Image 1 (cartoon, helix red, strand yellow):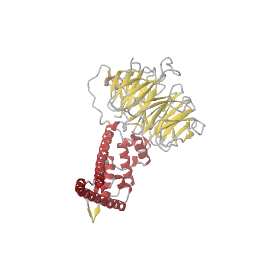
Image 2: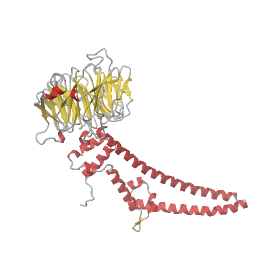
Image 3: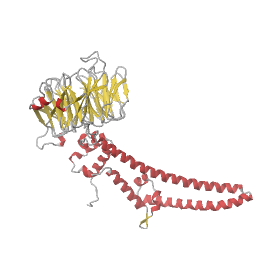
Image 4: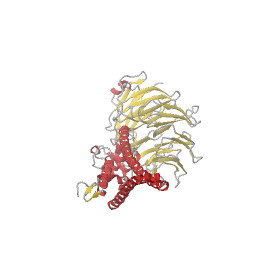
Length: 573
């Protein structure tokens, strides 16, 4: 086999890289997963940016040269006779016929032009002789030739401009892809083929502001050997769970008392929950999501290998749930604790019976990867997908009880409000929408963000909460580096929180609903006053932040970072 041949795996990687560089991160992820690129031996560092475009352009140039060969030598002046689409859609023989035809037309046009010039002199004589009719005829022919020449010149200029525009567009997309090396690359739902990188993040000024939390006030939990993508406090006690790209989750015991130097000096105990049986750091077993049951006695973890695992608070593996055929991106217990819900890249959602740990029901409604799931009550839930759809399903029913269509991009997250009456969704189309089971169309369509919205959270306020006298608020976090707070009663924007410099991946309300924590790729964790829309405290970490969460008392805050650490800090009103 010739060394110039390209394998299907190599071609798949080039297409994947093109999609990634063009900003189609979900599509790139789906293709990379289905093509098994995570198991490929191709070193992506050796593939230059724009490789696929370069190869295609060179291929077209070769075809164009081959079609223009005359007696073995190319006629350079005739290269402009072919359009790019013709090079792609026609064979060499057809292209040569097109060139011959257009050469003939060009020669005839030039003859007409010369003929027109000669007839201009005759026309001058005829004008003196009163031959107005013949003069008009020659003028029309001359104008026709000139117009045809001008049209060809315009077409040539447009082709040149289009080629230049394509080159500039690609260069801009490549540049944006570089800038997004921490945005698309660090998302826990898209990271597995894109990697994580904090390059491009501006170095932080070492000067502390009056409201800044210093490192001496923070407890840093070290132990993971790769990015930490998820963290969650146990609803009972002082246990904190974290999930990482190193194929492990950890359950940390956080001592009572203030965080910082004193706590750091103490030996911090943790249980390591290994998701592999042999080789360490198996990429296919990255921990993608985790969730505690209501009692805080069991932790469920989802992995890139498509398996859900159930662990005791002591780190003991209780069960492994095997049925999905792709990575699990979302896991949720219902409030009763008798059912566990999982959503996967295999386009399905599964409800597991926690008494038998068998699959109670598998829901196969989506036509693309399921990105998020959320319970409405103990037997009804919603799912969302890259197929732009949202389905509301009920255990025991074979069809969705409701289908919501309105987003024009992949739906990244869904969340039911505390009453279960309203469903919020956010999408790559830059909108957040509010839905009700009482109608097919969205109740509200919030369009203030200018880039993709990655996540949303409801405040623990209003009806159905322990803070019934406070208004219900929805927070949305976006790649445009802002967080927006929405008044749901009136369907309007309350505050636009513009304190971050990079995409925001996580937001979390304090248990009393008065404060909002946000984490961003800019390495900053901000604590905001919901009422005033202002930053109260800030912590600058050593990497991009993927998730933030409050403990049940609301006096401690945890965040997980791209530099393999988890940080815990105190929050005092």
